[in-house]
Image 1 (cartoon, rainbow, N blue to C red):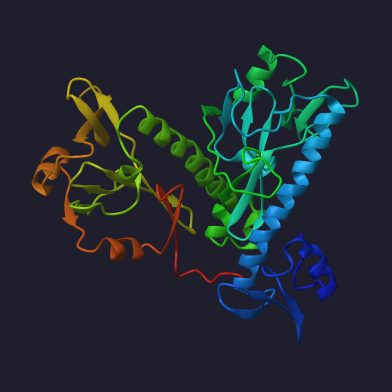
Image 2: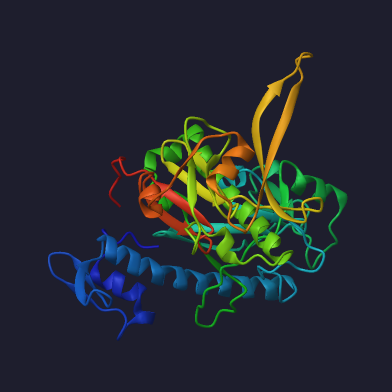
Length: 387
């Protein structure tokens, strides 16, 4: 990918020649400029608008190049045609951890077939997700994926070569939880839609300074939040498939006829607000950089005859010094519940949120992801580095 601030007009024109014509035009003044169709104006290639526009082209160019490499690898090593499909293969299980795989391997998911789902960033606020190319182990002549320098970070590629075994299963499952990866498909000319996924880059949304990437302690909560979004989003989709709930019930917004109440004078886990429809808004802090908002997944209660949201209340300690866990339940999705009923159920104090937009804006700049089922909130008071 080009460093646009250092590249010449000829170099930039050559990079984007596929899109030349009506879509992309360049010119040289004091600096190289690109024409932005949406603005109907010229911008320096290093400006925010130009970066967003050109990186949207870069992700298409890179996807096309990676697809060529995948096709060549399939032919060279006699792999099945679907070896690099993002859709789960028959008998395949996918796993994700709490963020270490993202930091050290640049992957979001690992399968029991030894396939790794890589996340490639650098496309403004987007990243490109695809199945990483394996490599040939010099000692065994087997295909492996991951990092060839470290035993713990490499995995035997089993698909199309050998069946998965217990050793591979144990290694993949260690410190990870099973999940179903999502695919946010996007169209690239000449590339099947099930080969790549375009996803939001949380580190870019939060505008994380470069120096933070050199400090593991500061980067860890960001990677943890990114891994949580993938895993919990998958669980929300499964919950919708197993019930009649629509996507709107998990969206971070105020629905028609709904009233929201925020928790005051106390802190109960990630609980931040509760709606009259029994929806629970949780807030996860992402260190000093911002917050993550999401709707808690309800569970089916046979005794209550419907879906309810369980809320863990402050614990008590009995005479034997044993902690007693207490849970309250709210009926999910309606009918409307009054604030008196909610406070009577939870024994907590809430106050009415009169303006939903102002309520979210108080936290910072809101950036919806995953079909508005999550909201990355970037704190406004930080001084951001320029790109």
